[in-house]
Length: 360
Image 1 (cartoon, one colour):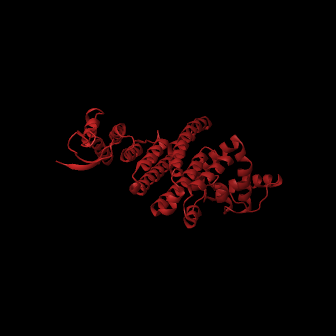
Image 2: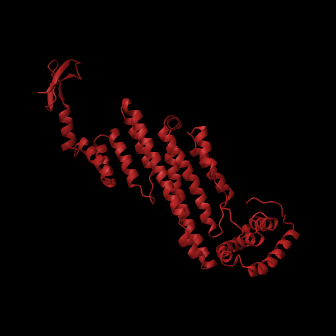
Image 3: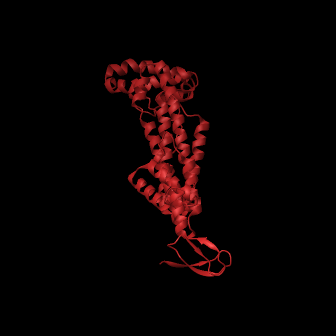
């Protein structure tokens, strides 16, 4: 027999009970009580399962990559005992696996993670917190990477845009839908990172490394978005750039000063991609010569401000690299094009466009 010490809930008397039996009676006052075995049997036969068995199945399912099975069994365990930290943790992990990019679940992940930490025993809270926050950061980085990779895939968009103005309008419409969807993915990724206490990031080197990668990936996403819009002459509004820079500052919270500097020293969120004046540079021999500076300034300060101007820029940058590659080194190309460019440059200069150095 497995005798254990117990205290009667009515008289407070010290008693010993056989834990293998389902019930007992206090020898001092005669109060009847049930044992842990009875409670376990109630869970199995009345509620429909053994919580430990459910937890084991959920854990094995996560290891095998069976996200839905893990999610279902974690929920079964929570139906039996809602304050089981292991079940909340396993449910969070299953959501991370289930979370496809067309249906990110940042809020549900944060809820489950916070419950896992809340219900964890005192001596396990630090370990559970580290695992929960680590899952947040890894998932955040995964969503950011996915969104960035999608934005960088512009081959089909370029082919469609090359068909003419009507095709460009359709490309812009479809791309706007994609970009709005991806921005929701980004917001969920940011939500996960922002759910982690700054002190935790500051005190854990592993968290620092992941946050640094998240910051760099967010910068890459923003720049990929701007480069994608440039395919059809689009440009990010100033307020949108300001909002992204604000998010960047929030993402950097928790990093030490050196890591913050390294996160922005190589890349920054840019307003627009640098576009070379291919033909003019080939004719005049330098990207920064006065004539090319005039043309670049006219492009940015005048053409980009109108729809037709942006369309012209788009078409120009589609065909000019090929023209320069094929004809750029031929003398007759220079002799034909340079007089035309000279007239354009002179006209712009007469209208007040300066030829001083220009940084785009």
